[in-house]
Image (cartoon, rainbow, N blue to C red; front, side):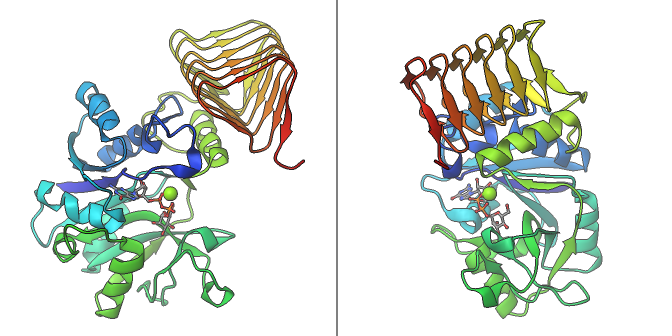
Length: 358
Ligand code: GDD
Ligand code: MG
């Protein structure tokens, strides 16, 4: 048996306003809450029990998991105050059943990956590591945790979000999935915020613990920004990102009750949510329409997210923007690159041409 802890307590600030009501891992990606992709991938890799380490908006997870049957035991742990990544792992300890020498998987709750989970656990056990990290190479590593290793794969340092050029010593970053020997979790201080990246990993290295890494060059995406969120959803629908929770791949995914006019074009891996409407002549490309969104005649929605029940007026163009739940955008507007409209906001007809570039 392998247990896992899924870290889903972050505020998802970079995805506001979508995360005002819904925590990031519960936002719909490829037609289901993002966390379902991670849970079903773990399940298919042989994980039998998952502790969801929640904090921000814990009740949204609780309500969903009460109804869902994902074929795996799910236990919800909730921090009263967010304890950070390491604090959340330590807080999950009493909920684990593994023995002190057994392997516990830990996942960041916002990474979409094709990593060989079983292979990671096997490597951890074969090397008798204290912790094994999954790394992925990226072009610009500055927004992540940098993890240099020696030739044998032993981790030499952990540099979280480096600020100076001298610290950019590798392109291999922490991809947000670890295997811990359970007794290592026991040693994380309880009851106070701890960053696994800034405190636990550097501390383990200093103490001479055996921290090893596996570099995987397969699919990897951190869904931290609106652009990445849309890309992840499209990749799941198109089949570029692997998930057992997407039963069939295609150019788009229409959820039950969705209505797409015959002269509308929907493609690029877009999702049309439950009871959402795409009217005549509208174009939806590489986008995510949440449940009940309505796209009027001739509107163009490109690389964008349209929140629950939001309305996009006729002929309006959205490109690379986020529209909050219930917002109403009048006809003939143009919102470009990076614009965000807050939930419930209303824009009159043809009054806005917004671009963060202009
Ligand atoms: N339960 C709980 N409590 N979870 C938390 C808390 C907390 O206080 N704080 C953050 N988390 C969860 C988030 O929900 C997310 O799933 C995960 O921990 C990582 O937090 P992020 O806020 O997404 O961190 P990041 O993306 O800036 O950086 C992390 O991920 C990168 C890879 O995507 C780090 O682990 C980097 O080292 C890594 O490269
Ligand atoms: Mg993240």
